Image: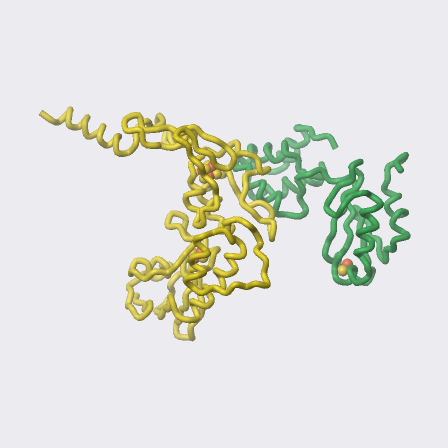
Length: 246
Length: 157
Ligand code: SF4
Ligand code: FES
Ligand code: FES
């Protein structure tokens, strides 16, 4: 099936998400809450575009919009830029300290909305990627807490989590760097808990926290790693060379 | 109310260990203890083998669930449009003064919790106040001490 994005003909499968097709064809669409490993979040609305399936253009959320029929798409039309600017203006009220959002606001000429006072002081837009990352890839240590204007991301009872392994997956997927993660040479601190870092026994690169490595090892029924990937490969190659070499 | 693990275990074992029953179990605990004790949250997470965080999300989402002990008697004061127009704000102030607590709080003796709600569906009786399951309509400041007095334990002021 063929669709037209910004005048360019693109081939796609029925049911594919519009954002994927655009990106594959080198057409940029800005996103915040989209992460390839955790697709379908669809909560920030920054990726909106205009789609015409023959009945006039309509605004859709491209990261969760499955293509059903031939259509023409505009990702940067005047209307798209205006609506995206409004979405960004509102997100800025939610997360006034996010430099990324401030930058996007400049790019799309987002209105100031002086009548609205910022809902928050932080950087979090409550997209929920972090809680999904933790639940799906790690241990489910964090979740959304409360609702409405009081909604936030937190550990149970706002205490250092008993199950968090300090893997940092949550901080890594966060689009606005809202989750503080600090590291020293030996430790990593996140969600109010400090973890011991383990380094590669051969080259000294950081492998992760002790708890994180133990969890990974337990899941695949092995001993925790002591080497980084590069040194591990080198070691295997050495063994192979010893066995098969002359 | 004393929290004992046996009661918690009994509540949980009324249901199969499946996530879709978690809300029902939380509600049962709420009903029994007037709040959801932390022991109950942790026991439920263990029973369902699910992260505590997902239960915490649920317990903080629903207004009917509370993680702090509630009073023996729950006072719901309506501040919906009709009641508001008929002076519910004065009643709120009145109850707050009588009990020495703010809306959303529980009195120090554990007798009363005060909640503000938005329309109880009895606007003709505005302003409306509900204590536990009893409705009081056309409430006036003068009647407040008498209404609350019925719920005070014997020998209490
Ligand atoms: S650092 Fe802790 S909270 Fe964040 S994803 Fe890892 S286990 Fe979850
Ligand atoms: S990237 Fe599509 S809604 Fe956030
Ligand atoms: S507004 Fe109070 S009962 Fe409707």
